[in-house]
Image (cartoon, rainbow, N blue to C red; front, side, top):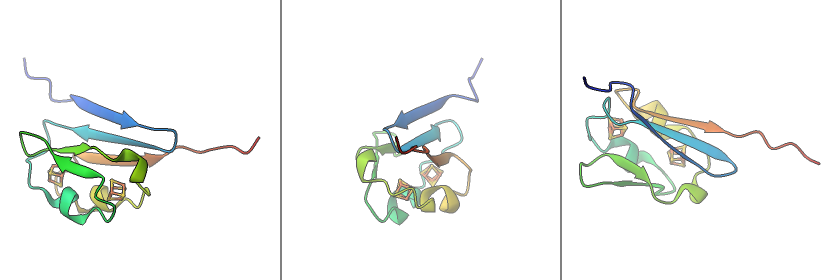
Amino acid sequence: MKDKEAVSVFQNNRVIISIRKNWCKACGICIEFCPKHVLMANEEGKPEPIKIDDCINCGLCELRCPDFAILVRGIEVKDE
Ligand code: SF4
Ligand code: SF4
């Protein structure tokens, strides 16, 4: 059975980037639109957040993805 919900999750202490690999058609739009060059195509042409620490959580990748395959969420940091 195909795992249609397979999600790869990448995170640091500020953002979580989730990629549904089976929804992604490797169009490269998210990679092109990322202003911080966070994403790079893997061998299948699908995005990998190789520079997640440069992500500014602008949401452009999520907004531009025609297939709802990439999601970015900020992590709330509480001041001590
Ligand atoms: S949220 Fe913005 S900076 Fe972060 S990966 Fe997506 S397009 Fe790039
Ligand atoms: S824009 Fe969406 S479908 Fe296109 S490569 Fe990025 S995640 Fe995959």
